[in-house]
Image (cartoon, rainbow, N blue to C red; front, side, top):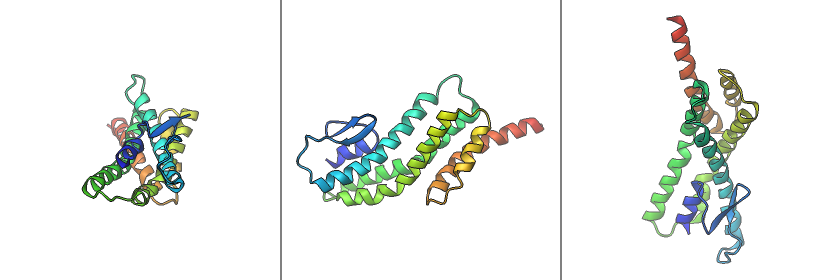
Length: 177
């Protein structure tokens, strides 16, 4: 079941972990799980649902022809900011394969720190999607969001900001030369 959970945490529903209204959750017809396990898994699947929304936003917009440089850099920065979550899933999969007695609490311990980061990224995506800032105004949105005191959120948003700064510096260099 842990392998299916890892697949669901990557954003892919299945028979055990289903999708309803864009949210992943444990299939109610499965009675082999204790109610406490169901609660823990559903909390983890909330993180996966947010991750899935961000990834679908990136993949649906990243390679369109009308994507501006700042917008493209924003998508790239989001993808880079999600990489620690993906690396955690890889290390958990390695741990599950190496040790047969992996507990659900280990998954919870490793994945819960990613929750505020993914939530902040999703909030930023929704804000950008709603307001549709053009040009370097997207840089201002990310800069304001990166002033967070939540552990890890500022670091993740500064990675997004770094990608946007690359575009800004290239523009400044072109203007100066």
